[in-house]
Length: 295
Image 1 (tube, rainbow, N blue to C red):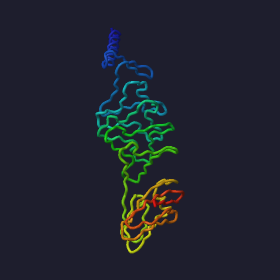
Image 2 (image 1 turned 135 degrees about the vertical axis):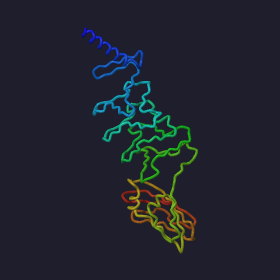
Image 3 (image 1 turned 90 degrees about the vertical axis):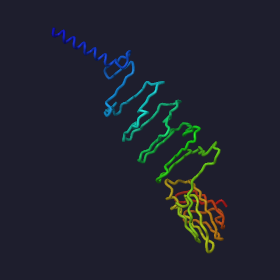
Image 4 (image 1 turned 45 degrees about the vertical axis):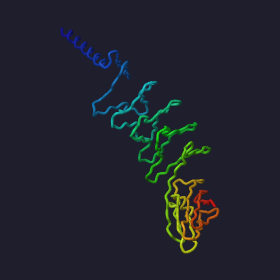
């Protein structure tokens, strides 16, 4: 009799286990095997609200695949309706994090349903490098290429950041192609005041527009040395170029633009009262600049 009750108890336990595992789906079956859990229906793995759920927390050099056999389905990480934060690879190691690394002819979309939120790529505080569209293949990249009144910002509006837009060794950089309006560039206008002669700084020249009003006779505008100009541009290289508009606002006298050590003025360098001149600075070597005038 004792063995009968024991066997009956084991049978009831097994029945409860089967019913519990199959309760989420009437036709589903869950199979537990060595190193594998297989579910023929929907499978939910969950924890309590404030608990942590770790998948592959001890894996180091192995591969963790989520949806590895997914073809036409949808893989969702994070709750679209929540205010939480979804982090993909929070590692501090010098590893490589790849998204859609095996995509070849497919379309990869990031934040396609984003409305009032923000999409940030590489927003950390470290001195990292973010590359979009690397490799040697021929690629066409579009940023917010839709028909809306988009505002695209590349680079930071604050800080001493340097934004590089490169076209490769034989490529081209097109700005405003197919646009109905000309590109708009910002400048900083620096007034040197009403003086006879002046020595504008590299920062003032890099602002784009410099003005001066003459007084008591013809004056001279002495440019910075080549060393000073190079020091003002992070990572300066041969061929780097910038332009400055210099205006003689009045005072009835003429100004003459002159160079210094390492900065050579090429072309007519006189600026009559009420006129202006465009100076094109071109780096020709270590601490060496040619300054071409448009006259």
